[in-house]
Figure 1 (cartoon, rainbow, N blue to C red):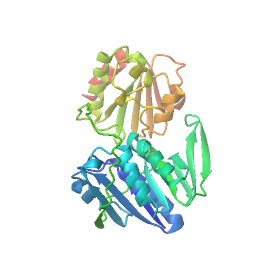
Figure 2: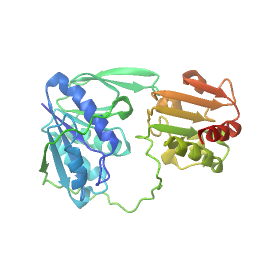
Figure 3: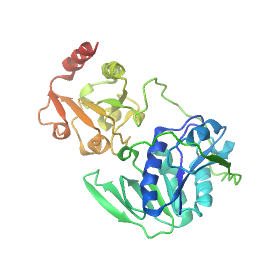
Figure 4: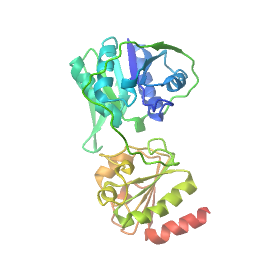
Length: 313
């Protein structure tokens, strides 16, 4: 048996999600004595592939280096992975925007059921995944010959980079011709991505407007963290939607999560309740966020945050 992990990368370096997907693959491998191989599909992606060779627990890195994979278009990556995947027992990738885009196509092409958002491995064919916004956990067993799986990376610890394995080029390039990359608008920030941030400071509707998020940015900078938001804040137009944490946003599990002016709707809690330490700041003593917080401060955020910044200074 061999497990295939599809890497998340930006063509120059791996994203931390890949390290966590490999950890999930290692959990599967212990039940089946399987090897783990990593696929890098991109363009001019040799640097990312070289980094992948260092991932602990893997036996080989496959490289599909072609312009048609530069932006990981789902139609192209899906064809490639489905073709390669016929020779593997498991195909894993992160439950990210990219993974959720191409992997259902892979499952359809292989005529198997996809298992989404796993948070633990019970055996080589049995997994746990959350549903009902994380309020219940399902144990799912698959009888398919090939298991196609997305991994909720917040549930797994990243593997180390202490390996050195061989690289192999993949030549069966497939351009489906069904889609093309036009452009992208990226938010440029020196702060860490939410998925890899050690500390996250998130704001909700209580921030009142986008201008007030500058307070949270200053606090996050003091702590070396990233800035997130609830869906209410995003829907109100305070901040862009790539900052959203929650069931329909990013699923995170930092060492420290500070929720500011966030009431704690179950959709938001589903995206951050696995954080190691949760701090809630809200003037409403009945806010649901206090029920899961390790530390709660019942206070006006417009007084508490400047004071906290001052103390950190």
